[in-house]
Image (cartoon, rainbow, N blue to C red):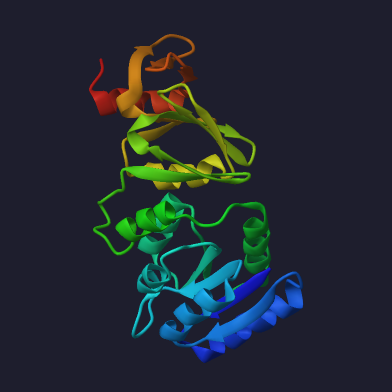
Length: 247
């Protein structure tokens, strides 16, 4: 796999290239660029399989580099310093990222994922750009769901519930579709809990706007708009009733 590294910090570029040579022999670094302008030219000329791209750079930032390239035909891995708002944007868009200083384990996992999945799409970049640096209370309409061979996009409002399946999560949509996503339920909870979603059971997160009926009793549960029955833990029953003001 041919890779290009674009980062305005020379030390970061050298260290990443060294790590790739040592730990990811299947990756050939064909260009290292500390200038974003030269990075655009390198992408156009060398047509890489993977691009490691810093977000904040002089002359052109990461988004401007991608806009200049126009046709994204590679797997994109952003390299950035820690930023909690950026992390949320990465999760909504399902674009892979590495935090500086880069750890070897995360780098190897990112390369493995790039080998398995399809190229990064313009829609993913659009969702990320919409969320990155925006008002922390602003949310995109869509979420990118990574599955084994690629990414699919769904409207957040159409998600009825999410069910844990070991280290995966099943997303059930109002349309009847179901997607198995390569993320644990805990990570999905962190992403959706600021929206009108609630973890009502160790196995389930529900969209509070998709509840059709609440059933009390020995085994309390809700019936969702897609007629799926979701159990409610006793601990969360009171929170649910308080949220809606149910008696």
